[in-house]
Length: 268
Length: 234
Image (cartoon, rainbow over all chains, first blue to last red):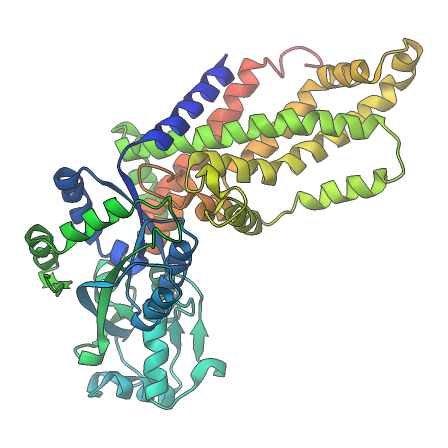
């Protein structure tokens, strides 16, 4: 009896999920979701456009892979070079810049590598390398990881085989947990760091170098490659994101009094 | 230590106030894992019984394989199911990726070998007792399997519950094929992974305690409903 009822309930859940109208699947990066901005935007999107946006929270690498396979309708990511390769392979229709936030360096309060006195992000990495201080890397081909790799390259350093360089291969939150546990340096997006609840002995040690700006772009999946994707909904969502409502909500979102994202979409 | 106490307090608060999100993800956890356990039982029990009473050349190999599959890594199963059900995969046209249905499919693959292996072990022992009787009654193969399944139901329930236990605590596969989408495919284990990622250990632990409590409640109610541990043998 009980089993029968459960089976019926399950089937009902499945049918409900399958037939829900106006559902758009959007792959986003962990940094966007962890910032809490999604919790502000999604209800308003639903009110204004009727679109129920379902978020798949993954790294930029996986987000683009989901889009290339046609498993989501659009992606919102932050790694320009990967995005352009992805577009060149015919996976999407276009790339629209929406907003940016920035990366910061987080490390032990006593700052054993002396990062606080650095002038640029590249200097920060040189100090860490010289001091051989523990450094946690995302190591997961995410946008954050790619930015970090670019900075190491600019610094002329190749730390991947060093003992103090620990690539965890996980999301921002898990990487921050690891850094907190090892009292290590780490590069994080500002939003994830501010929202992070397990700060332990870490604090922000470097910010503000323009090279650390992090551009988010919105890319709808190409309906010519995947005819089933909901391109009309994806376009509607893009219009909303670049609208005045979207702009006001993105610019108005603060955490501990700090603005996290800056709207910079060009209105055509 | 403090986190554990905070987690317990938060778990109590979530349950007492019947938190809407908690009810939703708990209900989905329960329906996905119970459905998977039922399907795995329907496949696994007859498979275990059939293996126990039949003799064929590759029998030892098949049983060893089944036992080895008990250790299938969920994340690999998740990846394979993802590739099969992705829009670019062979079953992509069904559009099942990121739905509870495909989460059930992944869990069935993970737990059927467990149910079948435990069932096989239990029935093999029962078969030794029943062999002469059933042969002398000239029972057909189907009748033999039916009798063994019925008379071994107590041990077989353990097989199903072991499968259910693996399913409800599983996170690697359903994270990949379900996607942990809020209000659609988020279950207790994926929510725990999410809260851990945010560094919200108290909340993660609270959900963990709810999960453990749920597993205990399900096991207890099935034992009570099936009236085990009452008379001498059953």
